[in-house]
Length: 316
Image (cartoon, rainbow, N blue to C red):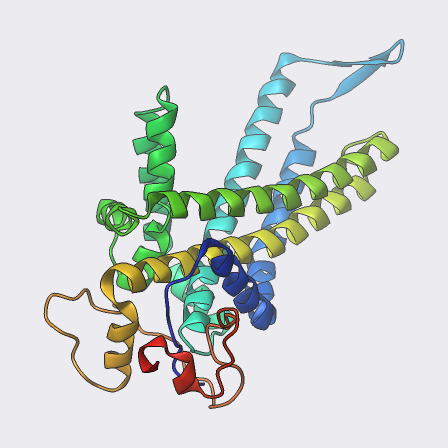
């Protein structure tokens, strides 16, 4: 595939590009999520079902038989949440890798993406932990907490594409976002709202099935929970990775001329001194030449490029 023609993007274009990348590589991304999330969802639901407290019904009202059952239920819920979190973390890391490769014109595979994420699992896990620790210090100060949420928004792409870990990844994210905080906040907020709507709709459907069944852990309810969790993750995890990755590269194009660095790397020329290296980790195999030009954004209104060279604003 031809080298991507990168340029700065608006908020709407970031989501447009993210959706296009997701759509074109949906098969790979779905394999990533299903391979990790389905077993985890099954295990989490079974843990919760086995930890359900015993109840007795008196005059149509249910009562727990003992306080010990409450602690068992809480332990089960916590264990299920931990399993789901760990699986989602691995799936997210793999989706970030696959979408980064696709965005830069490579050919992502689900096996390579999962292997890449698994080798860096502890580093990927460490980033949100550090973010939570930093946020807890400001738990009573809403505005600083929101500021950090946006400032650290591209820390995981920094980790996976540049090999920068821990606090340095958070610091690098904050420097990239500096001067672009409001657009970054807008992208993250809108993306979070969209994924939240999808999750809420699926949760409501599961709640409706459970209400009809009158038993939250009947066979039908368990199957509905597993299906809803899988579908929700299959939609939201790759989509979140897509818009965050596109946002990350957009920041680098704007602030570090990443498009020129990538071009220099592809033609075998060293970028000018002082530039941040374009990539610190190897990308996947090249796709054969052909197909649409990555990263699949539409041209600006009124523009009708006829060749890859015409799509580069520097040639105008």
